[in-house]
Length: 495
Picture 1 (cartoon, rainbow, N blue to C red):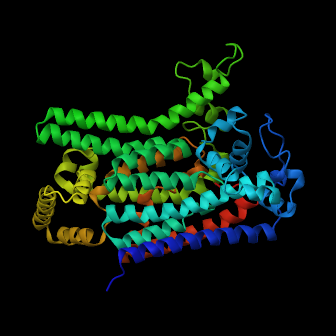
Picture 2 (cartoon, helix red, strand yellow):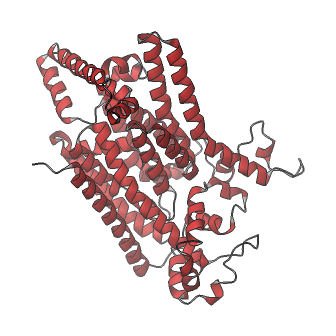
Picture 3 (cartoon, helix red, strand yellow):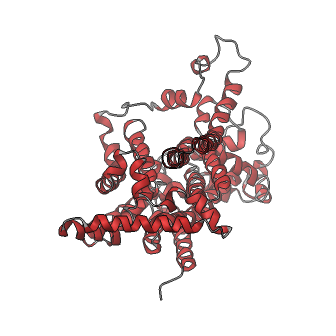
């Protein structure tokens, strides 16, 4: 008898916890064996304002060596998050880091972790809270990843394999450190899961919160846009109900606007602090823009982020560092495109309504009806049955070799499901941005929360024709976990 759904979810939870303990153990090991490249991590200049509680406490700590050990692990972008949590947004470049993680760190250090401040110091408590938040968020993100995979793939074993891969993904060091990757993964994956399981209001709220963790949280509105367009298309073309189509559009637009609110609000917050009340000649250049957006200016001015700006011969090592994740991205998209070329060329509209099941098209509605035991579920089931019958008829008209290949695809490739189309589009956009716009070495962690990568890799691992690629994927994850924990924790460059 196969394991139950709950036992698989329990296994995913244990895998996520094991991966976090492994990363922490590796960081401790490498820090004990090697000296960091930069030893300035413990430096902590006074805040520009006098509101920080650290000045009156840090000189009286009971266990300064432990506090110093924690502070020494605040490296790379972690320095910004801890500084923001401690002092707020003091400088223009700090607005490149979104406020969810610093806010949670500040709240936890002033509440549940407050008794530790006299023991190890305020900054060390902030660092400790950042580590706890990131690791706890990742564990829950892995569980939601499994639940989403079960809904989309409809295959518990494939979902389990993909979730374990996610637990040991090549960007694992960032999900263990004081970075926003874990919180973003939790609220983006969890939000999409809630959307496809029918809890639309909760989904929109979660996706909006993901935009407080990272700027690319806005892109998650694409899932809602896609579903809105399909339902509006169905209402207008097939049901001939213009009023229903307009209603669907109106609700979808409101949902998307709600997801954009965190990014817009944060830009307005920066404008108020950096531009409002200053003389025109003294304000920063981006303040004078018709639509003053500080985020793009900061990325360009301080980090040189822009279209093709990173395409230089001297950056070849960074392209090589990002090549595994980019190769996996391209292969997953091409594999899907070959199987669903009609769906891609129609941009998910006509082919989607003909090829995709009504259960996917109206999934949030269908799930809500199922919870209320509505008899409307019968029509959805009938439509799904007609869809499967139509697919079998298409296979029956195919040539024998094509039919065998199609049967194999239907039986084995849960990855090649029409339901994955919006995820592939999202992955394609993210991959193109990572390659052509961003610092390319960041692609490993930038794409690490993209579910299709793990769904595709999970298939490669068990496919007889591509099993060697599955071994390479596991070797890639293991190598980047070891390399990342070694280099990143000792303040050496890594993605």
